[in-house]
Image (tube, rainbow, N blue to C red; front, side, top):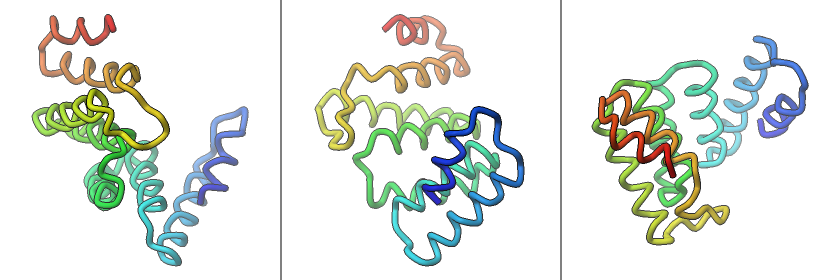
Length: 142
């Protein structure tokens, strides 16, 4: 599955529909052969970002978080998913967890620190949708 995802990223053109379907088949096969959090996360991201199957993606993000609960990148994807689903309150709570982990240096994966821009960017987008414009502007100004 990782091979198919990396191969897709290397293309200088948009992927065709059948290539996404191939990636999905490979990820499902990988999950069948070796059910692990890494493949579960790949499948959750595919469902969320490509297929738009938010409720199914939520299930797989939760499974991945059982193993990698401290990984702020997974938490960020989950918070973004909740935002897309219109569950603003839960999304805001997840962003609070992300910022706590980043500020306390608890994130143990990939050397991500408190100045990592993406949580602030996506949190600001959430705040705009929640109509907290002044707070959103502060997040965008970081």
